[in-house]
Length: 324
Image (cartoon, rainbow, N blue to C red; front, side):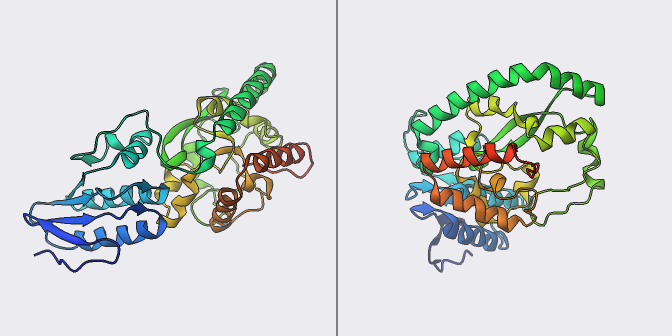
């Protein structure tokens, strides 16, 4: 029998012996942590029909922490052969789930009528039309410069080591949405398979090694001057990234996130940001990365973006700049 003692934020009930979890009006970091705990406790019980219903009829807002909790609970349920079913999903939440691609992996039994043109409530930097226009203009200028430097860089890369000129990798953007990031190749072609052999000098959910043996001689120069990142202007033009934002993590890094750490995905990743202009080579603790990312989210404005872009240009032309 299902324990029907209500949680503070997540009342529990049952329909034909199927447990029902009532999701609150907002699913942000605090609620997301309790949501994870609530579903975790249910998974330890004997659920007759092997399914849990998530009642989203009251929920009007979900942020990246809520999305993270949904994904964590989905994986935990699948590991226990339990099906999570989302019921009565409201338009603002459906818009978020659709834009992040989660409607393709979640079992949504019913939802209120909504339009795919509807924009979800999110961080103001993501909603800003002016910021998007700045991104587009900056990306076009950046791609024009990339076109000028492409041939000489390509020659140097090919003469230094075997492999492609460009390197693409799956990264996670706004709300954890996956995209392909592009860079000039700065490592040997088999770098990914060698990663486990390289010491991680950072703590937490990201990788860093100052003397990474996978980096080529030309790659070291490209990283030191940040020239390896110029193809990312294509990602900015597409809308996967912004000129200014947070560092785009890999799916493996996101897999290791605790629920509060998903907050950094409330904004689009950027080619530059707080982490890059505040001693990116010296940052070793993932908690420090989180603090810088949340600082950006709190302080965001168009003026703040322009200040970070200016600082980035100054760092690139200084002798003490580091590499991502």
